[in-house]
Length: 392
Image 1 (cartoon, rainbow, N blue to C red):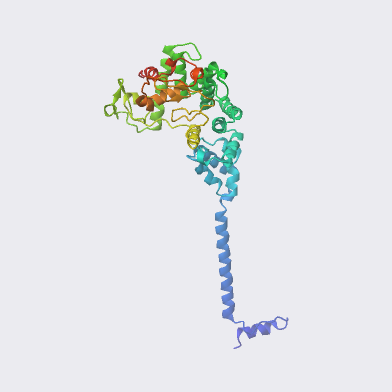
Image 2: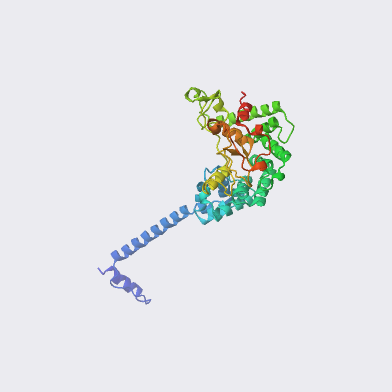
C-alpha cells in the first residue's frame, strides 16, 4: 500500500500541485492541533479583554451619578482624589460640574501644610461649579490667610446669598469688628441682621452671639429676657447636635465630684460641650468647620499668629486673626486672652478659660484709646458665665 503522501501527490500531480513527500499524516495532525490551541488562546484573550473593558461600556451618566454621591460623602480629600487618579475617564468625569457642585466640605478640606496652587485651582473649580461650601471655604482662606479681602468677602457673600449659615455668621463677625478696614468701618446693625439670619437657619454660634447682643444692647435695643431665651435655645440646640452625633452618649456620666470647683462652679476638664459641662457631664465638643481648622493650622505653621503685632482669637475652634491692631476684645479680668466675638468668648470660657482666668491687680493698656470700644463689663467672663447659667 502506498503512503498517504505519495497517493496525494499522484492525485494532485495533473493540476500542478506539489506536495512535499516528507509531509506525513501525524505532522499534519499536530499542526491542526496547534492551530486549534492558538484559536482558543486568542478567544480567551478576547473574552478577558471584553471583561476588563466593562467599565468603558458604562454610560457617562451612571458614572457621574456614582461620583456625585461619592464627592458629597467623602471623609477626606484623598477619598476623592484617589478616584481622579484611577484613569483618564475617571479624571474627566470626576471634574464634571455636577460632581464638583455637590462636593462636601471634607472633600476639599486640605490641610494648611499641603496648600498649593493645585489645591487653590481645585477649590476654584468647585466654586465655578456653584459649590456653596467651596465659596465659603475659599472665601475664608482668601480673606484671612491670603489677605485678599475683597475677593474673600465676595465669595462669602456669594455663599450667604444662598442661605449658607456659616458664611452669614462669618460676615456678621466681620461687620462687628470692621475686619479688613478701619475702626470706624464697623456696622453693628448689619452684623446683628446677618447674625439673626444665620440663627434662623440653625447656626448655634450665631444664636449664642445674638443672645449676647440682646443682653448687652450691642447693635440693638437691650432686652435681657430675650437674650437669656436665645442663650437657652442655643444650649438646647447644642445638646441636640451632640446627641445626634453621638447616639450612644451616656448622659449620666457625671464627673462634678472629680474636678475642683472655683467660685461655686464646676471647672470641667477642658474637653467638653459648653452646655453639658455646666452639669458635670463629659461629652466631646462640636467639630470645627474645615475652614476654621485650616485657619488654625495656617497660622500655627507661621509662629502661632499673623505677625505684625496682630493676635488670633483665643478660642481654639475659631482660628480668625486680627486684620488690624487691637481689633479683638480682651478679657477685662486677666487681659491675657482676646476674642473675635462674644460667641467665641462664651465657648472658650466654658471649655478652658474658666479654669485659667485670674484677676490682675495692675493691667496697663499699652495701646491707649484704641484698645476697647465698649465698656469693660461687656467683656467680663463672669458675666458670660452668669448669662449661660440657666437650665433648659
